[in-house]
Length: 309
Length: 254
Image (cartoon, rainbow over all chains, first blue to last red; front, side):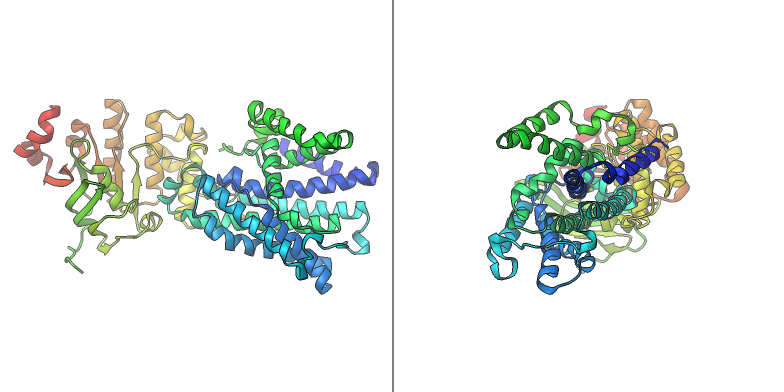
């Protein structure tokens, strides 16, 4: 009941935002939605599957480059290029994930990072296809979606559908089994769950939604660059999810909001000090607010670990 | 096949061996468990009880020998497949899904058993709710259903693990010290519950146990392990009267 009211309120505010906000802030909100989707997809693994990936930029970049290459090199329209982003990202996640889920904890994280660095290197070196270090420029959406308000609505609709789908997945039998794998892999085997297969399925789903975020970002940014796959990009969803709260489904969305607003507020005054400030914020949140920004709001509304029965 | 299998047995092992470094943990165990048996496996610490359980349930691979479950060789079959063939187990150290509620623990077991665990859309909270509540009622946890399982009392966690294992209506249930850490009265209660469920459903149970009062109260047959091998086997009265058993085991605790 209360959560439905909150949802309606948030949607109304977001829908009316273009009437009140200048283009710059619409662009900021668009970016927040994209980063929020990326972090929520990442958190399907971290929060619900107990798997920490240090290489999720790989799937973001695969999505971004897929969309950009289809538009730039083959002249495919955006509405066909964008759905290809999650397909290629999912294929990459299936290929890499097959090896990654065989390991756990630190080794899982390091192998995911290694695969992402391979993706980065391939993009960086394959100049004839990807443009290498120069990236691909002029990847703009069609005229109809070019204004900040239009692309804002477009992004909001797609991110909304993706978030709704991820929310359904978390609450589904698949999500129950995923939490069981997180809590106790050995016990999970003895209720008939093939642990690696389940982890791989979650990895592919997470990769696919990261690919959607990458595709959306390509057109938002108007260009794509190799550093979309670089390890610094891989840490973005990790930091955002930690700030917002990994134990809550909506934590990463809240984290994206806080992260991007802080980044904007600090960078425009003291651009050099943003990383220092971010570091300090991360330390404070981890030590004092282990359940993230959503921990401030409190209430069982946000809890995911012990659902109502 | 090296050995003939005896038909009609739920569980059979032949010449089962496993060593860890220089320690021969299980040293040629032959076990034959008929349907409906309530079999206790006893022996001093280090006799190889838990290793034997882990071999049978596919948790670790044996060195040599054979394991037959319901007449089929199951060497190398992974745990999640054994489970689907009807083998359930609990662990010596309570093994549940701590952050989930008691109800969710059992629901997840039902979801998986009915192969719904790759369903991405249906809200899981509504599925098998009644079955899970009925099973919780059966093990005496109906009132605790909504609690996160991590806050349950120790004995209730053991009951919850039993419920998780029972969700698949197994043919064979392996209980590794189901009463570990419980008060004496509670031990008798939970084993009486297991015996009642086994009697009602025709379930075959193999369990290990340190409390001899409990063992002699519920077991139909007893297998005594000593240094990784079977020292004696028989009905409770025969085992109690066995001189070897008294010397190496019962004598030291009674």
